[in-house]
Length: 125
Image 1 (spheres, rainbow, N blue to C red):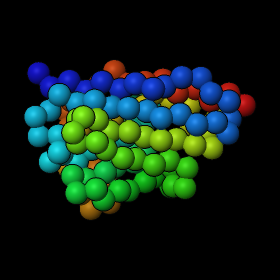
Image 2 (cartoon, rainbow, N blue to C red):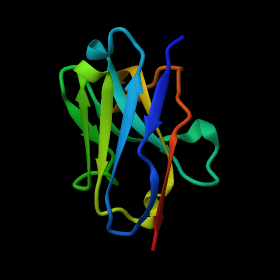
Image 3 (cartoon, helix red, strand yellow):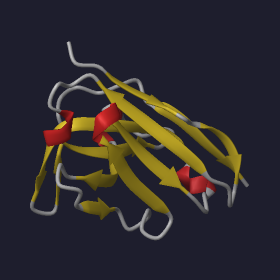
Image 4 (cartoon, rainbow, N blue to C red):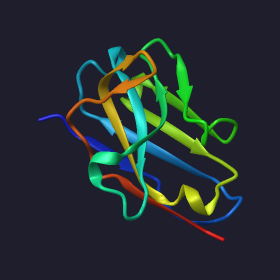
């Protein structure tokens, strides 16, 4: 069974930075598109919001809320993806999930059904 494990979350003050990591057990990680999502407090689980995505060939896309502050990257040799977050704001507080093996489509990303447990990011004001 494919596993996705997110890590790197924590409590940080507004203006601070965090780097999230996502490790996948998928055999074809280097051929996979992947993305980071977040679930804000009180939001239904089926309403995760797309934060950033990176295709297998390195093309990146970002939600407006992430542009200029977050950077998505991947290390195929380690089956790991990253989300470097800077200039964090209290409204960035959420559980962050990565999704591996989905598909970029026009205007968005169609996620794979497999999700990890997520990693909590809390930004204090």
